[in-house]
Amino acid sequence: MQPIKPQEVKARLISSLPPEVINVFNNLIQKNFNGTEARVLQKDAVKGICEALAISKNQAFENKLLDVEDAFREAGWIVSYDKPAYCETYDAYFIFKKPQEKSLPAKHY
Image 1: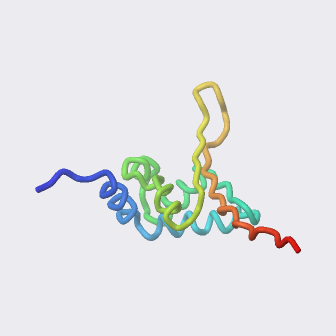
Image 2: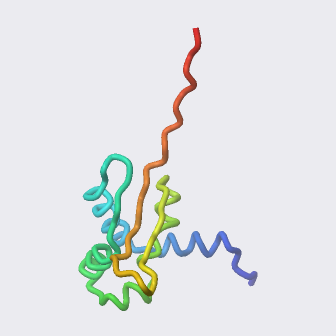
C-alpha cells in the first residue's frame, strides 16, 4: 500500500460527489447565471442538497457535499467562495464565472 497522493485526494473527492449534488448546483448556476457569472447562495445549495438526498443540513456539511469547487473548475468554471467573517452578516455564497474568451488579435492592414 502506498500513501495517497495530493492529486488522488482531489480526484476521489470529486468522484464521491453524488450526482444529485452536481444537479442541484447545475440548476442553481443556470437559474442565477447573468451571462458572465452566477452567484449561488450556500443556503440555497444546502436546501436543495438536503431535499434531493433526504438528509439533514449537518449531514450535508459532515459529508463535504458543498465542496464542489474542484469539480466545477475541472468543468471549466472559475469558482470562488466567500463567507462572512465573525463581524459580518451576509449569506455565504459561491461565484461561478465563465472564463474570458480569448479574443483574436486585430488584423492590421
